Length: 467
Ligand SMILES: [Cu+2]
Image 1 (tube, rainbow, N blue to C red):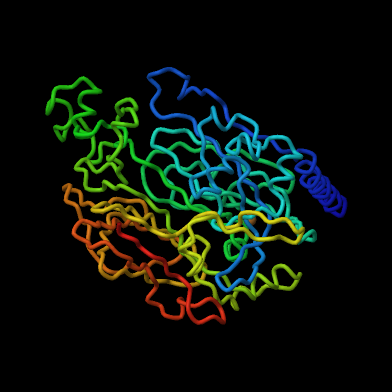
Image 2 (cartoon, rainbow, N blue to C red; image 1 turned 90 degrees about the vertical axis):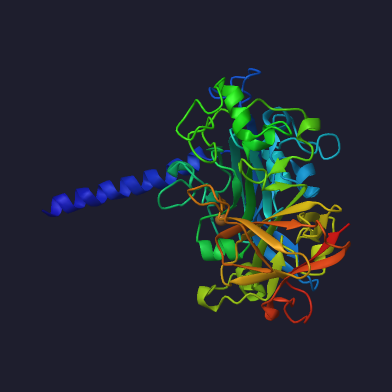
């Protein structure tokens, strides 16, 4: 009996040794972005395309509305840096992604070798994390490289990417560490996603969520609908009928050439030219044009507790129950920084200043135009109400689902406020038709959220400018 216990213990020791030594030996940065795949063999008839992006997991600093610098665990861009710094999604086509990053001559290329990944990624955490945007029918290769947290060398933190609420995500790429894989320091992994359903999603690290989300590992993600590829003036259903060479009304159960009310899972028409697309962008495959917009703004609601970030930087124990946000932000900024239309940079502990909050939150709507707000909430502590006065909010979708009943009726509603908790998203259209030119406000009616820690005026507020 004793012998058996001993051998079992020896087995456990060997297993432990394997578990510790194998991942360490396997660590290395590897970036994956194939130019062609089985789904996209590179023919002119390909539907959708291959998109790629690379991000770092690490640490850094951000500047709050009162000038306070705050320590972050965060993600930063390792590809598409030019687009990210300009407040655009960092997602690139495979052709652009597979070129080497150069700060001046090729800012949207990619860092692939270990030295350039470390030189770019260390202390480069962004708040929000790099913005991602893909189109339905795309394949998306997203590489996460863990560059380590230079201010916390005592920690060996892994990171993951979790696409929150994303349909048909493979559990292998879901980022929940108990059921999936996590990426250790000096390692990379390429996550793979298809883009089955248009909508406003978001993403975050899933390691110790109260800590890593509060510390800043939260970002935005959206999928554009295949309806954007239908020529102006043609109904999506008609375009699908033409594509499928079906007589109108002759095809399927609902008589419009689609098997379901949103025409999902159908072969879309080939991409049209930029001229044709102009003025016809949609949030969803609505079939009736009701989600059309002229300008779009991703808006991330979020809060920071400066005490939590301070103890997180200074090797102190963090008590999750004590978390109390004192900074309330839209796209990582508090008012008045929300109306600053350029990237905010922060000097890190190495004396180098890097763009820390690249995404502006000021909303500008052309005369008579429609703005799509892709609102997501990644707060770990608070519910927050966002309100407008003078320009109504048309809520068209909750949690990446169009508000529509099974009979095809739109269930959109007008409101002057929306309330979200962490883990929720809403799509809102601000229609400036019949709205006088001027400056309006998008602001929290939780009045304690209109301050920047000890500074009494600021917080979760931004301007809506109608031209
Ligand atoms: Cu993490």
